[in-house]
Length: 97
Image (cartoon, rainbow, N blue to C red):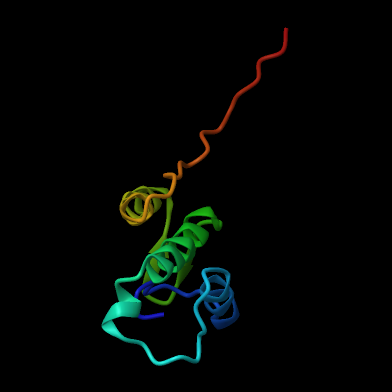
């Protein structure tokens, strides 16, 4: 939660940790924080926020402009652990004759 800073459910965070092979109840260490598993779980949670609809809650707003900035961070994290970068889907317009 400390790495994401935005409202993501505890269950979602725990699932991302488990998916990456980390046990949520384990003690956190410097090695854990610097591990590809933890970095990947952090990127996964941030990617979840990017793929969520725009929202405003209390003093926080999460819109397309902000999502583009977070996407840069997400891709830096994925790249640092050798995983593929993500991209926001561009809306498509179909014109019928």
